[in-house]
Length: 473
Ligand SMILES: *Cc1c(COP(=O)(O)O)cnc(C)c1O
Image: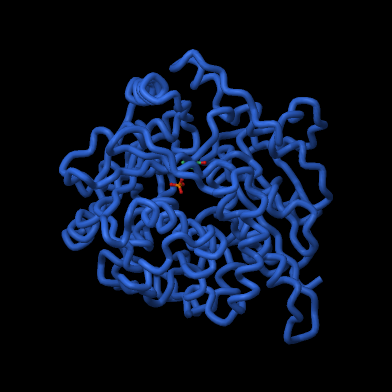
C-alpha cells in the first residue's frame, strides 16, 4: 500500500514511512492511495474473531508487506493484552436502541490507548530494522496535549530504545489525574513540559517544529497525534468489532462519536469505505462546534475555544477533517491545497457543494451544551446504572437526539474515557464519585517530573535540541 499527501506535493510513502513521519512535507496529511474493501461474505466470516485477530485482518491491507501477518498478529496480541478487560473493548446495552462501546480499558483510561499501545510497538519494530546506510535511526516525538493524548503516548513509548518523547501541556489547564499520568512516568526518554499558555499555543509550537528545517534536519521528528495514519488505522477495528456483534453485515449499525480532532470518527468513515454497512456516523461536539457548523451548514470557521468539562473536545481546528475534504473533492489535491491555504490565513472557509453532499451521505452532527451533557449522564445513571464520563455523555446526547435513523438500527456511542478521569464533572451530574481503577491507584503518591517553560518557541526548540538524540545517531 502506498500513501499520498492530501496536498499532492510530498513524496508517497509505504506504511513504515508514514508511521515514522509527522505531517507530510507539503503540510498535508497522508492517506492510503485507495481504500481496501471487504466483501459481504468476508465481513460475515469475521464474526466472533478475538479482538487481536480481527485487528490483524482489518489492518493487514494497510500494512502491506511492511509486516508479515504473523508478526502483525503478535504485535496486536501484545498491545491488546495490556487491556484490563478480556473483551478489550466491551459493548454494553443501555436500552432497545442505545449501546455504548467501552474503549477506555487500556493503561491510561482513554480510548487513545487502543491506537497508541500499538503505535509504540510499531515504532520499536521499525526502528530496530537496519538502515540501508548501516546507521542507527532514532525518532523524537513532539506532541501537544490537552490531557489524554499525552498520557497515552507516554505510556506507549516510555523506556523504549531509539525514541525520545517531548510532551507539551498547558500549565495548570489539565486535570490532576491527567497531569500525574504524564509526570509520574520516570523514564530517561520521557520529557514533560508545562507551557505558560493555552493548548492552542502548545499545538502551534509543535506544528512550527515540524516545519523548522533546523530541527527536522537534525532530528527525526515524529507525530503521535491523530495526524499519524497508523493511529486512525488501529481505530477502524473497533467499528467492525461492535457492528459484527450487533449483526453486521446483515444489519446496519449507526455510531455516535464524541469528536475533537475528527480522528476517531474518520476511522468510522474508513470502516464504511471498507464495506462495513454503517447507517450513519453522528459527529457529537460540545459548544466548540466548528464541525457541527461545517456538517450542518457548510461553514468551517474557527472562533476562540471555550473551556468545557469535556476538554479533549475543546478544539477549533480539526486536523483530520482535511482527510474527509480530500475525498469530498474527488481527491483533487491542488484544489484542496488552495482551500486549506485560504483557511490557514483567514481561519474560515465554505465547503464546496460536492464536499457537503458527500459528507451528508454518511455524517450528521449534533452539539451538546453543559446541560445536555449533564442530562445524558443522569439519564444513563438513572435508567441503567452506567456512569459515563463527560465526553461519552455528549456522544450519548447526540445519539438520543438523532433523527431519521430507521427503527431497528442500533446506535453505538463510543465511550472514550473512564469516568474517574473526570470525577468532579461526573459527581456534579450524578452524585457518584467514581474511583480510579486499581491499576492506576497510587498515582497520587508517585513522584512527579516536569519542566515549566515560557510560551515561546525558541525556548522549547532549544530545550528539545539539548536533550534529543539526532536521527542518525
Ligand atoms: C481525544 C479524545 C476525543 C476526541 O477524539 P478525536 O479523535 O480527536 O475526535 C474524545 N474524547 C476523549 C476522552 C478523548 O481523549
